[in-house]
Length: 155
Image (cartoon, rainbow, N blue to C red):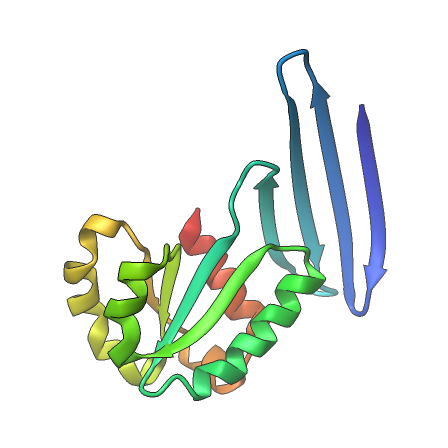
């Protein structure tokens, strides 16, 4: 049984294709989301019905400037039906958070880009993708682009 849905949300055209496969053992649910901006494809994501929520951690000096970006990323994630926990912390809290919470991707604010090498070595065994947020996207607080960067790193 296939169900195709289309909707228009603001300036985004969202095409959601849901494929439901029934069997005597299990029901599996896959959702594919294509979010198309007027000029370009902004995100292609998929979510398996059994998949856990993704945790995206942003790090800056005090966690203040990234908290503005987090709000914009959360808004885009909600519009795109992407289940995420996006949060910002200061560089001094990284160890404590990673010890107590599963993190799927770690994004560094441009002002703490110098931490990337040390974090890659320190958290190598955790297999957490670590990247510096694009300076232009950070400065413009472009939540859509930074969310896309995080999703791309988790693939």
